[in-house]
Length: 162
Image (cartoon, rainbow, N blue to C red; front, top):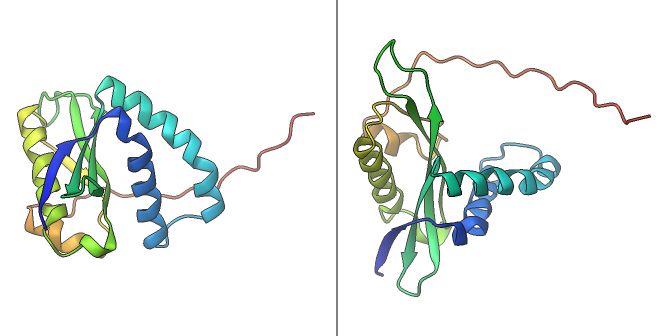
C-alpha cells in the first residue's frame, strides 16, 4: 500500500481531535466522561494554534486519501538565555496510527517530519511523553529521559453559582 505525508490544515481539525482521543482511550489514560466533555474545549484550543502556527501537524494518507496516522508539534514559548537563545521548545503529541496501518513505519516517517521542521525553525529542544508502545521508536530517533518531574494535584471542588 502507498502512503504519503502532508501538513495538517484547519480542515483536518476533526481528524486531529479524533486521533487524540483514540490515543488516550487506547492507553487507558483519562476518565472517559472528562475526555468527552473536554473535546469542545480542546477543539477550540487546537483551532487557535493551527491558525497562529503554534501547532503544526503532519498526517499520513493511504492511497485512497484516508488519513491513517498523524503527529503534532506544539511550539511552546520559552525564555531563552540560560541553555540557548531559542524562544521556543517543541512538544510532540497527538501521535496516532490506525491499528490496521501499524508496524509500517508511518509514525517514524511522521516523527522525522517533526524533527526536520523543528531544526528548520531553529528549535533545539523537543520533548514528548512516551507511551509504552512508542518508547522504543522515540529512543531510536534519539530521545532520552530527562530530569523533569511532575506532580498531579487533586482538583478543587467546583461549587455551583448561587
